[in-house]
Image (cartoon, rainbow, N blue to C red; front, side):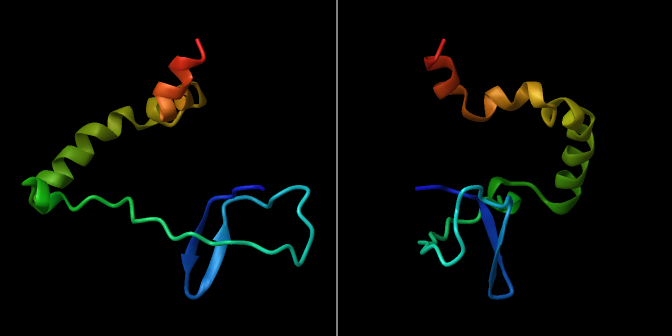
Length: 82
């Protein structure tokens, strides 16, 4: 079995990467996950507040997106390996 992340768009699945060692015509099972978007109004933010917060947090984006921070994507599993 091989898992590859992708996005459903306009009736097609767009894969985030081309799976290696998988032959054409290989059968697949597609599971649709719930959206990861967050409704900020449900959390008490209006559009202006959300824009201000996004601007303030933007200063951290470069650090958050660096490869060194990948360990925190699944912190509990990474910590268990130590």
